[in-house]
Length: 533
Image 1 (cartoon, rainbow, N blue to C red):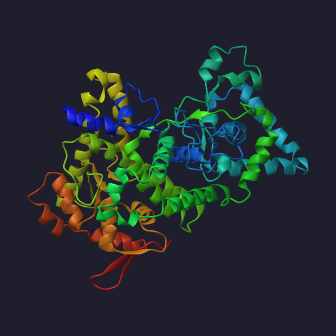
Image 2: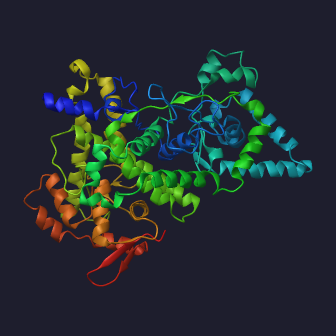
Image 3: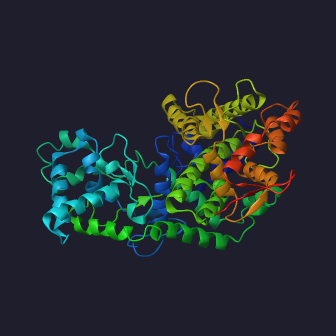
């Protein structure tokens, strides 16, 4: 697929970066299209943890107690590369995770450091020796209970659940093989091992959370851009007309409260451990990390993302429930962003009335039998999205001088686009089955609960048909009625669109909403969807 001169101008506009001074050069077509970067091997919880880490960290050097913390702001001049200064929590991870980590990567020096760390904690506890050991074990159990990602990793690459500022940390890797080869007979104590910790590998915290953070900053700093105004002028998006300053203030305060207030004295316990184990830090000062970039046009997705996040954070749910919903939101935002930008560049597809993204996800009941029309529609919808995400990376005009990407770069791009979409959508239950043929979009009870929390303000009630409209306007998810007719046309079924949309059985959606306590039936003809908040 090639483009004419006018389309090439449009493509250049679609690839314009935010922040404006970013270096967008890359051989990877996925980075050229989507920014730096979505990464398939970054886990859902690490997307959220990295997002919150950027949000909570200082955005200026020596700004630990001030500038940029708990803000959606870059805190830099237009000609500067934006940075943030994240904690690494190495001492806390040594104390919490060393005993349960991958055995073959436990260096003898770190084993001794761990044993010494335990004794250092005991020395700070004013009880008898037997009780000191029990108290230390209880504290370790508390911290290890908040593990977010462990898998088959060494202790320093574990991630905490991001339920508190004190548990947010940058990625640090232990170069075990290098330490055995290059550091043989040299790594004799903790100090001599520090050189084999790497804090910029991006193997797990792959910049995806940074990208999501930048989408929100992009929107909040450019709320009156033409693309945002075009969206707000559509009937389906009138509910998004809100005061931007209030949104920024409320979202920042709600997220800060989530991280600072909800866990009580948890941060105090983190500080106790880290101060006691100060000698096991790998940097005396915070080390900066530069932020990547996003397509400037992604402020549209950023607008939807920030409003949905504010709805979740404004609720009266517990902190762990909010963290679970925010994790799902980050996953859905990645999937949405992949489709939004692909559809902007792939001009071969139709538009969709009622959804600015101009793509569709037709969902079916997970129990729908093979051969039923709605299940076939959901399969066709997934196949078209999958093909679009594959196709968009292969547009020669993406590259200057028309240099087509090499096989290696295409594989990297595919991994982080259509394979990433498959992996995440299955991981959160949006696509089934996990393996085999007949892959299709669906919504389980957990995802319906998420859509209520994200799209309906706490305490708000809206008509069921308006809820369907809102779900379609935010995600392109067609649940029935007019939205399903639009979706079928997008999938190429012009002839049967009206018939199928009228006869399609959507009772499973209403039943699932009722089971979750989200549906209020006022009469046979009127049902309301509510967010209890």
